[in-house]
Length: 226
Image (cartoon, rainbow, N blue to C red; front, side):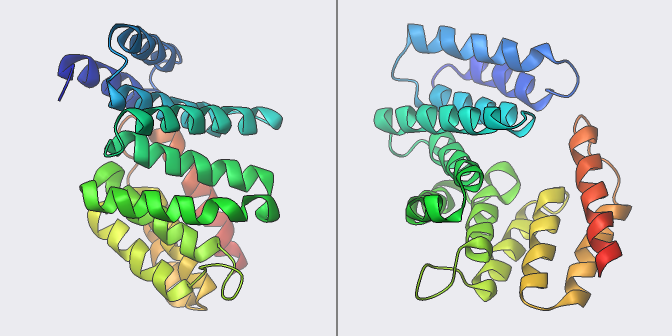
């Protein structure tokens, strides 16, 4: 890997974003400096796309859309440098998904096939990336996209993909939440409750306590409605 030491430093800063609010800004600065030095470093664009995802997730209102759109732009730049860059493929897919979610279903139908293609590319490159993330993206897409004849939505495929995500990232809360959601789409309340209760009872992951607490709260709300 090119610039491995910088990659490891930036990766640590992003992973420890909850420990210090400045960590994301520090990571952003490191990546911009690296791209100025080496425009051919595709993973740097991919991690900038990731940073805008995290900023978007904690933004409010119209700022969400702006940040996810920035994430899309950086992901595209990474693929322009190297179409096989795992980070650029993955975080472009993630930002496309959240951008489409903010725009609304009718405006985001054109993004479904690009997201699917990016997720499948990531599965080829490294299906385990970001706690089974490629399978998580694909499963979520199958669960939330309209079904035939309008689009590719298929709850059975969603469950299959998200079970793969849980297999590869068994401690990652979002895998269990999305699988529970897919089981509910498939009218399997028992299986959904199993994964929601896992989230509620699981220990918090180190350095991601705030993120995990939010998912625990959402899981409790869903359980109360079942």
